[in-house]
Image (cartoon, rainbow, N blue to C red; front, top):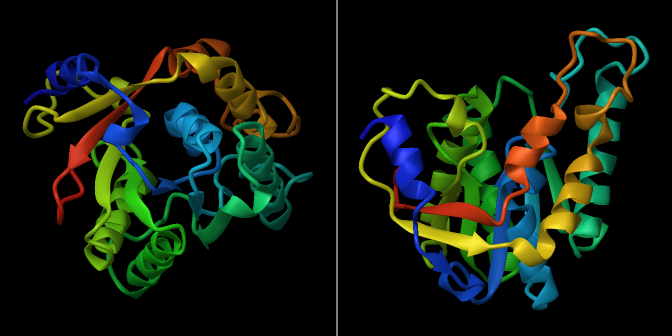
Length: 248
């Protein structure tokens, strides 16, 4: 199936209650600090509002967003982005301790090998610790190497906790070439997050290094434009069922 048709079908998936995705604990795996809010902010807020145990795992160290900043060299940038992630999940209703950081290299997250396997063990441990029956990770066709690697790592993790279903949430899929082949027609759900749109927007904006000119000395740094943020703050979020053993 081509990307445009896949994403159109995903946008037309049935709207379901949170229980269709998870009835117990939940793990959200984000390649970078901000992906958790962009793709799953409403899911996190809804689960938190219902008293579910939610864990968020940030895979990369985030040091690739502003590589030319002298004010925020890598260690300081990493610390800033981790604080922003904690601020964001707190807005969504979680404790700051619900987030853990794997600190794998930004733009260099491995999809296989010892480091990937160790990361999978951590994600599986997070799932066990909250009795998760669902793990959500970025779509394996998202056009970013870390998103694809995170999907592969999380697939390894799900093999260690097979009782947890695996769902993919697209973040940058809409930027794919329309005719790119991405596999079979999507199955899964859309979650109505209308009640949490304002909290989700505030969570996204809590990532101020990514959404504003907070880091002022790197004109080449990544920045989410307001219209891009608007795209993510819709009335629903998409969760595509991933077959066990596949990152697609």
